[in-house]
Image 1 (cartoon, rainbow, N blue to C red):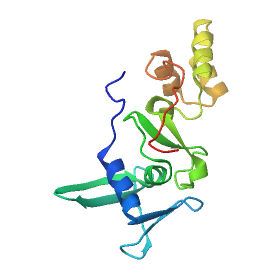
Image 2 (cartoon, one colour; image 1 turned 90 degrees about the vertical axis):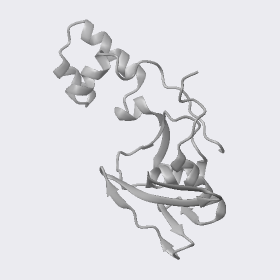
Image 3 (tube, rainbow, N blue to C red; image 1 turned 60 degrees about the vertical axis):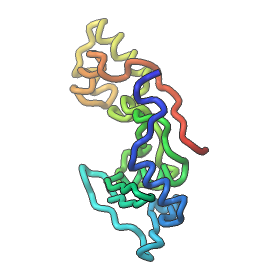
Image 4 (cartoon, rainbow, N blue to C red; image 1 turned 45 degrees about the vertical axis):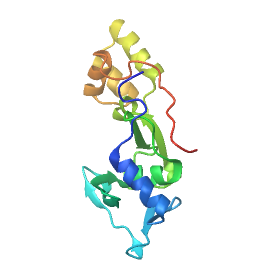
Length: 170
């Protein structure tokens, strides 16, 4: 078992508590979160191209403060806390502003770094590279960057078939 299995992020816990207390109410078909404490939808800021929220939560003597991406907060509020630090929430269509629940999926971090490339496709890239096909041709054919080809061939990504990730409630 990896060191990151069965651990959760503090921000996920804070978001989960906000949902359980009724402070935040997710609207999964619009990809927005309503705050009962301010009486309006939360207005995310944009960090590294992703919409994100500041989370402040006091729970007894503990105080949580952090930043969480809007799409991750929506996932946690609707599906529960991912039970691995390795789990990331991905946009199926690649649009970072489309935070509707139907557009989100839970994936391992390694799969999220290279969008929509399966382990089987990575294996095909490795095989064809050994046969002498150039990296440039492979990158064009699979519609990925030259650096992604390099990471696959170096064994930095797509090292094993995708594992099924679970959340606290489904």
